[in-house]
Amino acid sequence: MPEIKINHLAIVVENIEDSLTFWRDALGLPMGEVQEVAQEQVKIAFLEVGESHVELVQPTTESSGIAKYLAKKGAGMHHVCFEVDDIIATLQQMAEKGIELINETPRERDGRKYAFIHPKSTSGVLVELYEILPD
Image (cartoon, rainbow, N blue to C red):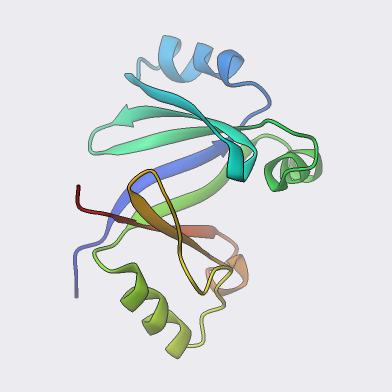
């Protein structure tokens, strides 16, 4: 079985700057990049935790999926992201085992391919898969 590791834990927040009071200032996690992802209509901030990250996700529009999630469920844990060596093979293997995929074909941005697995197949947890692309 190929190596799988946790890439990040994503937390939906109303305001990244306000959330940094805990994650960066009180907990002391080193701050990584902050970026706006137009295609997802979010602003994200990464904080380092060993070889993994905490990803703070803030909606940038009221109509985005994250904004709807925030309105319905409130701030908090959104998903866990696992890094895999071959996302296509992993998705195919999951589909063959009857796992419900949100993305049957991975999306691509910022040097990675990514796809989501439906919480119905994961005991209620939204799971994201990442494949880091070679430079």
